[in-house]
Length: 393
Ligand code: KIV
Ligand code: ZN
Image 1 (cartoon, rainbow, N blue to C red):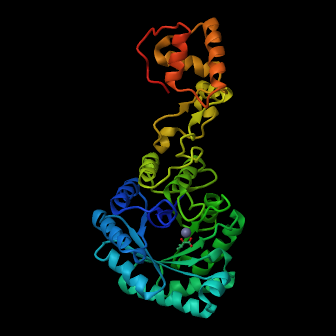
Image 2 (tube, rainbow, N blue to C red; image 1 turned 90 degrees about the vertical axis):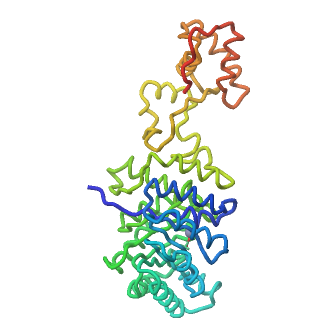
Image 3 (cartoon, rainbow, N blue to C red; image 1 turned 180 degrees about the vertical axis):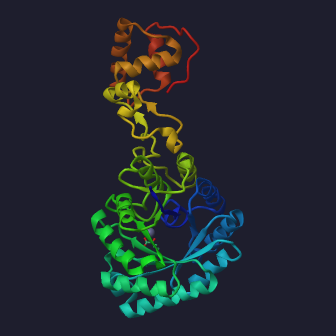
């Protein structure tokens, strides 16, 4: 039986604070609606101290989604915590997410403070946050480069002070899965069942999702992630990847979310329309090539049985359909199917050979051929439509 873990979405906070991703209030409301409808457990709506606009955006998300579990970020300083509390005021399910950096690097260069001072500030921050709301999450920024005994002491102290969730961010994306899992296991042991252990991974080494999955095996029960994997620098752990992994590999990853995966693609598209870029074409799950096949061997296999080259159906993650892209690597099988779909009928072997030869000559000069290119080619070769065209793949 798989175990349920929580999805904490930070698209509207960590995601939003990366270059090209800032969102207006209506844009945040649009993305938040997708997150609410897909079933994200907690939605981090913003960092209210950052600007008046972000404060107002968090307020608007609270007004629009009274049933959602909403978080606002704050440094462990009174001005931030009071602002986060004010932004969430009146909302039925508020969480203050309070953080302070704990690594020696940050203590020495950023704060010029001792471990004891930071520990005290962390505890004071959590206590102040708890004076406003019952649900407080604490994050030890740069936790993964923090000396382990000290990190355990900080986690225990903030739990004593009232934090219900302790988050162990790999702020700079430095972890490998084994390394991260070992650290998470230590924290789970230290806090026991007094708090939920959360993970927050960054993708600087391309390991954000792998690290989050390793952390689940080590006992974490909240994963922080963002749509399309947006976030600081190389991004955050991608929400759609985590969800898809639990669906496709329950044998190896026996954990489940409350996310309706069929809503992933629409949410990804909506986010792309709100920020300045979409996922790269080869992005897992939601990229435009994620269910597209161009190579002849792959197209032939796919047409014989789609499981030859697809480990999930596009529909299972809300992508309308797979696509067969016709290009210089494509084969006769896919070309014949497209010719038929375009209404030119089933070609006999000789005609297909002629069309295929002309097609490969044309494909050699282009990066993929559109239906219009193929129709023009067929007409040039003297073929005529024999039926009303079916919908092309
Ligand atoms: O990466 C990080 O450390 C963060 C914290 C504020 C949670 O985003
Ligand atoms: Zn982060």
